Length: 196
Image 1 (cartoon, rainbow, N blue to C red):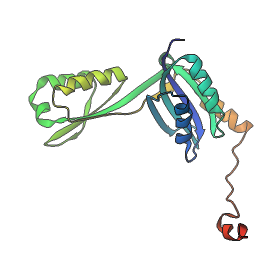
Image 2 (cartoon, helix red, strand yellow):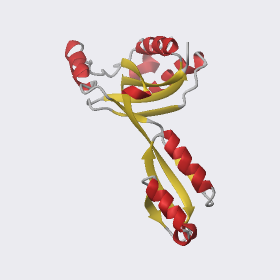
Image 3 (cartoon, rainbow, N blue to C red):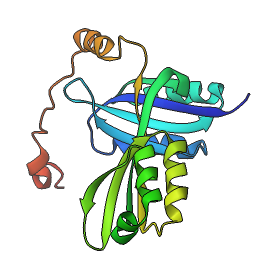
Image 4 (cartoon, helix red, strand yellow):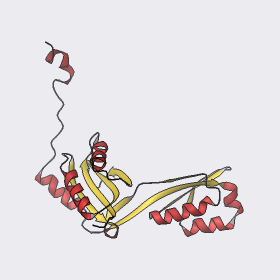
């Protein structure tokens, strides 16, 4: 089967160690994660992971099923690039003297929708958002103008389907409400409980 880029979206409980457990599922299968973002979702207490990989659909389908077996994972979806609206953000640091002295760089930054977020005597930091290919082209162009530093964020993506996941998540919460976490009553008495 032919490999292509997929965006995997996971909805999880916000628990410690979740990133590590999810990353382990990928590494055991020798699947490279190209990009991973985690953030709160539209539903209170639920986190959303956005993971980008290049694999065959069969592998991605099996992977999502395996991820859903994790206790804290509510749902795992996968989509092609055509099925999501996505962006990445980038910051570029260039010498301020080059920005002020060269008209081509100003046109270039306007063409890519970049705007200044910090202007100092020694450097200027520009920010832009777009698809990876656009960001890569701007990075290559700025490299000719003494690009000092560059960083790109992980992908963020929203599924094009108008319903989104929120409605399904609310139905899931009504069917299986999350239990309140109960403090272990023996936690501070371990010496007494485990003494011989």
